[in-house]
Amino acid sequence: MRAHLGDQLVIGSPTTGARRDGEIVGLRHEDGTPPYDVRWSDTDEVTLVFPGPDAHIRHVEHGQPETTQRSSRPDPGAGETRSAAGPSAGSPNPGDIGRRVAAERHRQKLSLEETARRARMSPHYLEYLEDQPADPALATLIRLADALGTTVTALRGAGVDLPPGQGQALLHPQLRDLSPEECRDLLSTHGVGRVAVSTPQGPAVVPVNYEVVNDAIVFRTGPDSAPARAVASEVAFEVDHVDDAMSQGWSVLVVGPARVVTEPDVVRQLVDRAHTMPWAGGTREMWVSIEPTRLTGRRISPADQ
Image (cartoon, rainbow, N blue to C red):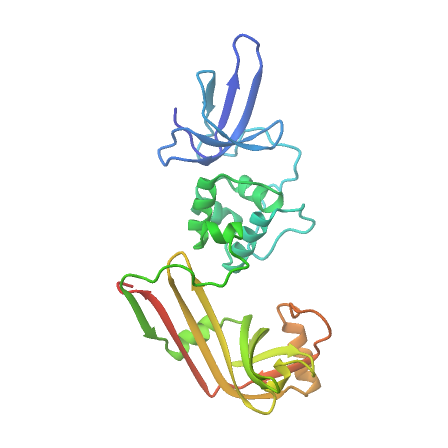
């Protein structure tokens, strides 16, 4: 027995006449042999199935619309491609895994269809995972993690309360300096970084949500907060990423003077283009800008990369 994604698995009992069918939304083997992840048309649940002698495959003609039955769950729209810009309006209540998958897909600007193709699964099943609480099989998570360039651990959210970098060091690591252009690319347009400041209690390193505007690092804070002490002094701002599964990562360091942004037009522009509100919440209307005078970075990777 061999199947493709989107084929229909039909199980029928010759003695009782009972019949059940569902869409094959996940393959465990590249050659299409069992077992399969099947989304049943009667319950919309996905289970791992080892087909018996009473089962057969109804193949969907390649390149043609699927003929399997659909549940009453809303479809994103006939002929409409769900984009990578963000989740659809009015999405149901997704589970943690679905939220992490969707967030990583949107971050990489991947469409739902492209991600499903990379993960060798049905786009309908991927949509289901992103929209509904689900507990996909380990093989499904491995394919999704590989398609998104992340790890199963990250998709499951395990270790979110532990510091990164608890994995073993590479056998033959390579530590190299990054060019200013590479540093700017890694800073991206926004994210979470750390600003180092001096306080009456001593040095402090504080995480902040930041934006990159015309090569300057800008962030919102309150006038009485620790990050506000960066104003009128030279400070260090750092962003990094650690891949525990691969024991590699990078860091970028920005050094420069910080000032308060006071021009009303500039403040309005910063508010309009901000990608997110400060995660810490509260009233944080003071914008601080760091003008880089030094931009450096380093990356740890396998020696053969």
